[in-house]
Image (tube, rainbow, N blue to C red):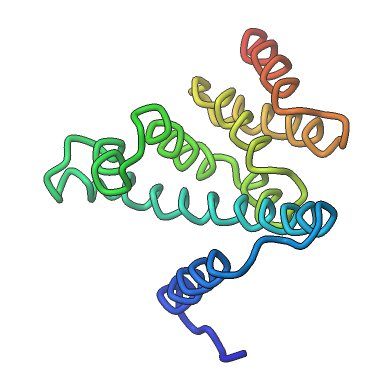
Length: 165
């Protein structure tokens, strides 16, 4: 495999690989399909995080406004053809993951799912103080690392924490 030395090269490889994957026949059995699904979910989680890292830069630098859009979400709705809700979630996650480095790292290393991280981002979105965000991040990350925890449970506990803080 050739060396990838830039983000642009990595994106080109991903684009090509995803096209090729869709041209191949589906899995031969349900068990093979389960294994493929496990891999694809891990890849999807990391790709969602990579997308949100890019969106965080666009949002922070106000690039979408400079390009003539009313907001980063409007740019996502137009260029990526996202629905209003999804574009808002991507922008929210992008903003929050920049404030939640341990959560972003846990997704990047496969220790928690992107759905768990998005639930944590939803909780911390309304917190204004960095100390509150850091405390909440620690508590919810520990909870998210428990294999029995679901994103819904993160939401319930997170809303309780937000009420206390």
